[in-house]
Length: 101
Image (cartoon, rainbow, N blue to C red; front, side):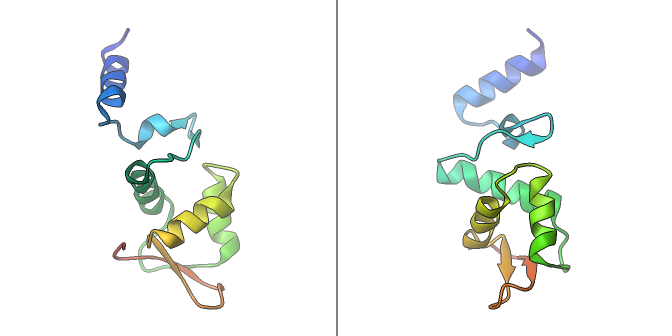
């Protein structure tokens, strides 16, 4: 077993694994049930998929989320309720938040 694999397995057992263990081949394989773990994932998605200071339409948000997972609506809801993304009242514009709840 390689050192990297051993380190990943140790991190997973001790709860210190990064979000990389949630991905395989660049695709999200599971949305964590535990809130703290899901928060790590959402923070990662927000910083890697969305630029600060830019407005996005809902189709643009969906397209970005589909690059990692087919259930873009669930991920979009999680990002909104966690405060990582904000949206206008009419839902026409989304933006990466500068703060989270």
